Length: 70
Image (cartoon, rainbow, N blue to C red; front, side, top):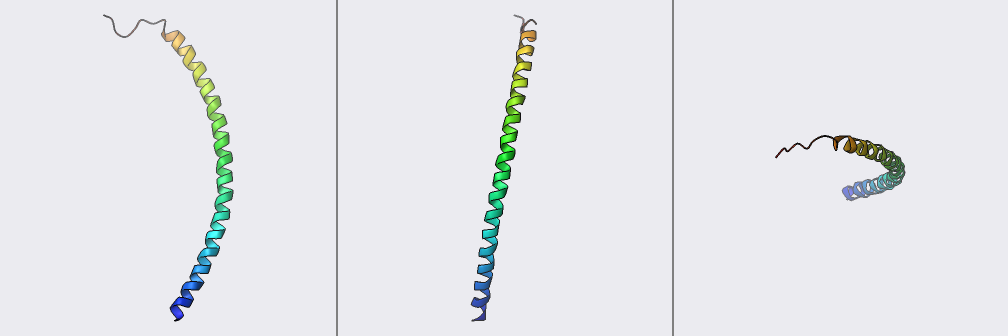
């Protein structure tokens, strides 16, 4: 029937589209991986900054009396 003809055409179009989407996804994944890598490096630098700040803060706060006074 003509319906099956339309379906097979649709199917081949869909296959072409998915193949295109897969190659596009690959490039997107690569781009994302690079961005994630950059983000990880940045977060490590942030953590270093934060840990230095926390160390300073804990040194300062340890001088204060504790919240609970028994």
